[in-house]
Length: 269
Image 1 (cartoon, one colour):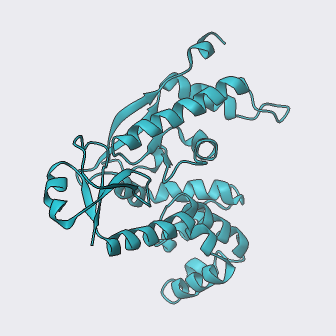
Image 2 (cartoon, rainbow, N blue to C red; image 1 turned 90 degrees about the vertical axis):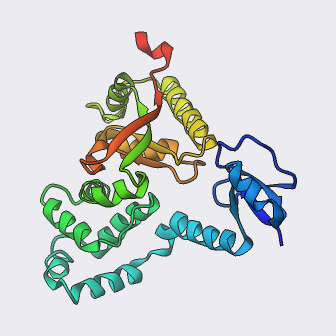
């Protein structure tokens, strides 16, 4: 029985075996004989067997597609279960302040970006706190994310509380805020489309570099552009997290391993 030796990005020595790919993250890998396991691990490879590959693949599938598996009935079941312990949290919110459909949308938004909805009480209490300001599910999702900061931070930071990110240069971050802010006529001002496309390409190139080094792609930007930037950059990028400082536990330490800067042509615009 062969094992799959996955190169997380820092293994330099080659291995004898049939070339392959990590089915979850697309990292380069080699099928090796069990006798080569110890040497591969010493050289920096992650070595897994068949059952572990299948289990990881299934877990990754659920994380990636969880939002598609969640419907109105599934959400109602979650609410009914929560109501057994916290009846007022549920009864005071639905449908008095917000509809079941809106709650479904909020939970789907969270799952789409791999944010756990296990702390349903916090999510619903946050929604209840902000429905007087907005009924928009996308806006309420952003508020919920901020109150899930401990969950989000622990998901992406290492055990020492260090979060390694791709950051935006402050000038670029500010210009993107201007570009994504609707103007008086309903259009978006700021960067011309060609320059915005250059920025997206630059961000994706930075993502490719950090993934090739074995890091999970985490992009840090201002809260006001977070969701829009995720929609622009995420297509075709596996397991991308786009976070804002507002969503991070204050104890989280941030280290920028890549900085994306404003394209040169935009500096004089």
